[in-house]
Length: 278
Length: 87
Image 1 (cartoon, chains in turn green, red):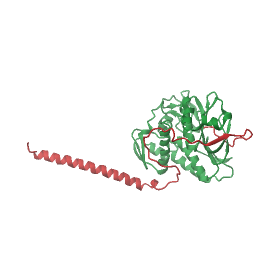
Image 2 (cartoon, rainbow over the protein chains, first blue to last red):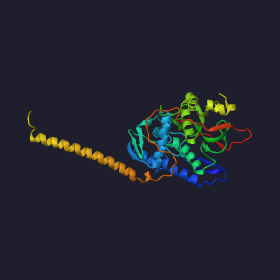
Image 3 (spheres, chains in turn orange, red):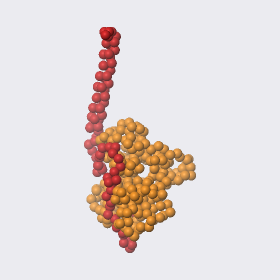
Image 4 (cartoon, each protein chain N blue to C red):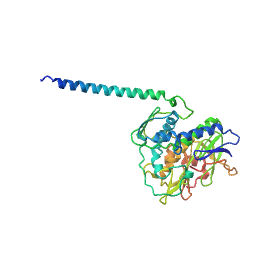
């Protein structure tokens, strides 16, 4: 398979496609937005988490997308979740994360409305530790496909394509993604324990703790990988209300619960009728 | 009506002077902020293709995030080319 590793996941492209440009894009984004690279711009901004900060245009663009996502999801997918992710124990690269440790407490998740972006000037009216990973990977997949012009790009479950692509889904089903974006959000991956209690990276802003959603995996097909990723996270966090939330947005979604049972949204059912197993 | 003493007049002039200095400082700070922003190299160079917009406080819109990809059933005989296994 043609690919490389970046942002903590495998990035895959069609065989024979040159990797250099896409790899450079992923690595540049990782250097700027990583929570685990000390010199990243994200860490520079988070070092002084309140008041004014001057940010680069790339940073402002990504934060703007993150604020769009927060607005579109009623604050469910928010860039203000960085403090809570860290409080849950996710404080280093996942491969170096201890499997268990001391017990952790939920953290307050500030409102995304405490963030105001005007051009390159960011104002935080209360202390906010930013985490832009909710949008960086999906948007970078979209940007990589734009860089290629044609074909497909996959990174850790986020996919964007201009050509038909057979995609494997959690639980073993497959679909044909003809064009657009597809993303799966999962609480089954990137999980660890603190004080013996299971933790994962999808924080519910209402509780400041890892989500206790009824779903373990949610896959969404959308116009782009960025939208699919954000919608999949929101639908997972919404629990039983997830399918209807997607239906209202005319998005196709597939939900897998902790027992492995599959539920699909109306639009998914229309496109892939055989997979309805709710 | 009593004529203000020289001391009261001096205090009033001092108060006006303080207000003037404060206003001038605020104006200068704002101008400095915009100048710094314009001068910042990151304001003029970018490799990003993501769009920039100004944050507003409008509420969730059920139509702003829609628009599905085109998906269909995959032939049973075809193995997946990629996996969307979650992150």
